[in-house]
Length: 343
Ligand code: AHM
Ligand code: MG
Image (cartoon, rainbow, N blue to C red; front, side, top):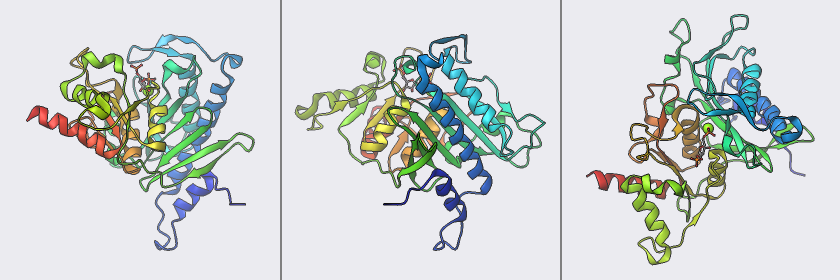
């Protein structure tokens, strides 16, 4: 029987480093502990999600988040689980979430650590009540050690400064997908044992694809380069691409990205002219950055259409961004169409 490697063991081995590399670890002990706590919180969220109507967790709560979206009960539960699990361990200075307007500073009664954790506690909220895959997305940054106290400003770092990122998808299986900057690994939750088990390492996104994911109902609002790209896909074998394309849109970014990490594809939630001043729908700090880094770490690309997502210098915690990510050659094609349109 091949040996099962738990998330704990995987992380300890990362911390220790390989003998070939002179025992130089890729993650410090505090980051390892932090990731273990995030994984533990995801296990509790998975349990709540699985109970569904039996746990009384479905439906809307009587509140809105900072973006004016009606919160679902599970959005709030997942947010609380993540905060309660992470606030006391001593690894974090502060947290930020899609469901909270400002940052959450670790209370004075607990020791403060050097890390900053951001999350979308339950992405794909519109799918909660209809029993379609949803997930938790997270991103970890290091706080500037010079600053005496922690503020929102500490979070405003470009995505290429992330030290860990991942998501946990609650689908037919619960799977945690993680990068600490040396590739992407997937861990499946063994419900009987209660532990995440390594099920895939060195995840790679194929460079080419014949599958796209976009909300087609927004087509009439798109910018010309995006419309050109999708039009050409739709023309299939008879068009300039010379091949047929398939379409998938789950409306849970975690599920769409998980499919792309598994078999390739391109995902787009581009800017559109419904609200011209709004750069896109998805949020940079806790959706586009972590997903963009995972995709890059798996050999894919992540862009706004005109620039690399991970190079954007954020100015606001909840800022939105246009997202094009997935198989490298397709993302580069979309970027080329933008450049041709401008030039
Ligand atoms: P959420 O964080 O409120 O769930 O919104 C993000 C979700 C993404 O998971 C998904 O890609 C997108 O919104 C779907 O949007 P739409 O319903 O416009 O297709
Ligand atoms: Mg979301």
